[in-house]
Amino acid sequence: MGKAERFRAEADGWSVGNADEFLGLSADESTYIEVKLALAGLLVERRKAASLTQSVLARQVKTSQSRLAKMEHADTTVSVDLLVRTLLSTGASWQDIARVIAA
Image 1: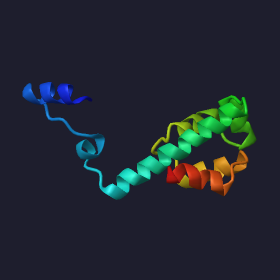
Image 2: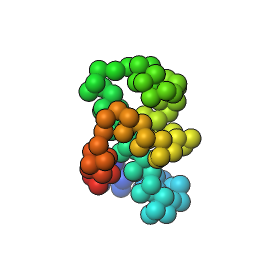
Image 3: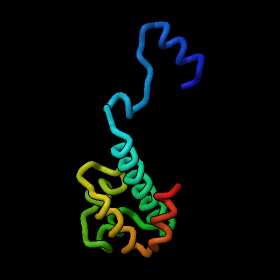
């Protein structure tokens, strides 16, 4: 949201903030979500770079297509551990994983 839009929204009585403020997230919780989203994004990138469908990759890593879709969307039911294990099984190195977390 730009400055002008923010000003107009506040002038109209709206409260303007970010998702962290709205959800009441601590800095640690916000960072955890960012890490999960980064790992999920890397999984999507690796799958697409290998020209694989979710179904094909799911079979390769011995899970369901719907579970893989949840991984790619950083669903709350998906652990960071599962994302990392799946990434490693696709051939991602720990350096690849560290690079995406650090970014």
